[in-house]
Image (cartoon, rainbow, N blue to C red; front, side, top):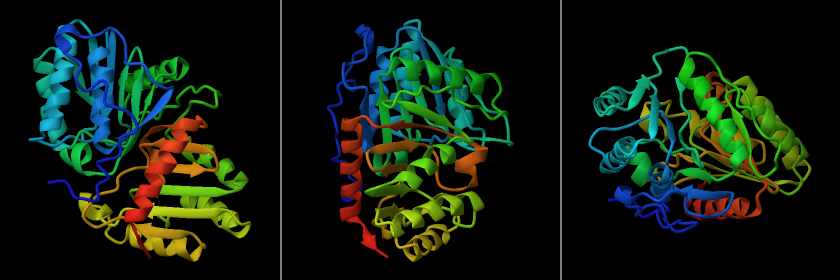
Length: 342
């Protein structure tokens, strides 16, 4: 049973893709805005909309899957159906997660081009579903917890320029998973992309220029990391000049084997900087990762640590698209209301 505080009722748009009949799959991604927030269980509708309307190409990269998930089974079934109707499907998964090898073997037995990243040098932490028409990018893994219980944030993106850029990023990952990649991003303010090594360079100037508000949500924050400290020094400067700064942290980030003290330390660190901090309820995992600075949102797959900033494969979106910003701010406010001040 899902926790009552999992915010499962957050639905920014209707799940128009969730009921597409793949036996007569429509040719086009259901119409909608350039970006739309797909939070929590609303991810499934966006994911299936991209998969079930793909006509030529599907590129998938995921960090984690779990055995026995009915939601994973639905997604895998949709990939197999896409392959059966002639779509070129490629799936790349991190080799750290034992169940990923089973998923890859299952897909390969169906004739799908699937593989593990095969490298310990770089963690493939990006979560992407892309067709020739659009893509979903954000925090959701293909695990039972992520797909059903967690607080998660993703964007469904219909921007053609961004789609071309993310296609190039995936191709580079596919060709050589052991090497760090840079996404070739558009300067378009509606949809700008970042990848590994690009997050700090994107958000730091925004924080330095912040005038009214900074809203932060992250699953894990390592305040021992020098680069995280450098960005947080800019957050402190924003507080001192009168910017309203609030943060929501996950209380149970150690549930995946991490350091149980990491977010407790981060919360105390942020509070000492003058940031208003709340922990989420203990019965839900807040795995969402986003930052709002004035009227800009940066949303993706990375946490606040050296891996998320520099050494993992990560990707995300920066946008000023008003509807998307409004949706993310509304989502943050719901998290804030269910949180506990520290």
